Amino acid sequence: MKIVNEKGKLFGLINIIDLMVVLILALIIVGGASRFRTKPIVVNDDSKAIITFAVSDIRMATVENIIVGDPIYHYDKGGYIGDILDLKVEPYKEPLESDGKWINAEIPEKYVATFTVEADVRDNPDFILVGGEQTRIGVEFRVKNKRIAFFATVMKMEVQ
Image (tube, rainbow, N blue to C red; front, side, top):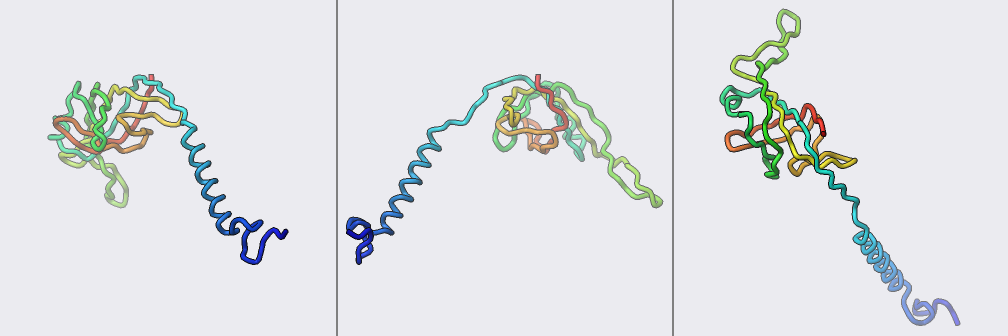
């Protein structure tokens, strides 16, 4: 008995191409099932953190509406980040050329607000989750509350 007959059937039962298609489908099904069976490791380590945000190039109207004690939320996801603990305001400076030298000149009616927030975070080995968003130093968030909305950059994070 031949392995492949004149019609291209394996042992006279099934076409070789059909057999390869069935084997590929079986491998895909087994691979998908094993992938869904394994669950990722989830570490539920909820803790408090002090996060410092900086907002630059804003007007006094915005600064006056950043009120200590107000909650802050993630603009896009709506997740609660935390409450404002402290606020520091400085004049906004921009590098300008003057007489062939670069200087940091204050821009009138523009400010830099640095505020700290006490946040509930989920601390994983790979990332820190704040307000439903992975957070790292240098990340720019769009944050909001009832009075304000702006982009704030994470400057410092202290997980407690």
